[in-house]
Length: 290
Image (tube, rainbow, N blue to C red; front, side, top):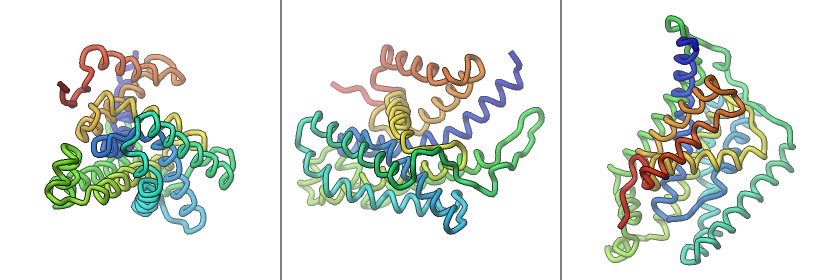
């Protein structure tokens, strides 16, 4: 096996892992705070890609610039979904929440199908063909920018959660929602903000990914599966686990595409998932439950 080829695959996976990490962080935040299984997560990501595509097509805005606008758009969508739908089933059995979010996923997928059609799209970027050589391997500038922006977005979220008053309230509600109510926190508002931020993360990830790989309305389910895979490997509710798990899964898939065949690259990450479930069910950075 060519060592240079393996090194190139590992580097590409590492840089692409920023997108995986960002979308997993959003899912982990929603579950960690509200214990809601968001099956519409991947479809929200697809909508982030389509917002970036629309801005690039109509206004000529590069996706590496518009990703913040996409995050804001998906934040608004997340607030609407939480206020209008999720808030009504928070105390309901989990199967009701799952059915609700599955319905939201189907609505988002078919709405994208009606508006944009079934064709595969890709957002054009000024950096799409730029490369920098580092000895025997090259760095895809678009992937590098994606990784840096995803890392910056995740770091900003970390500082928000651990340095701001609202962020501390979100973490308090995640640990003990009843205790947060006792100290006078507006838990309903906290849930709305948390769901909106989770949607904003996946919207930004969708915008960044749109410049790297093609997407279509039907791509949402696959992205949801990948997100849950990453979150389970990293540890449910752990933001650090979600971020590092995203990088781990991306590198594993990239190496799997070289060692096996590209169509079987997901096999490596799912084997990793099975091993985690067998030997460390709480995930790499998750906490053991009583």
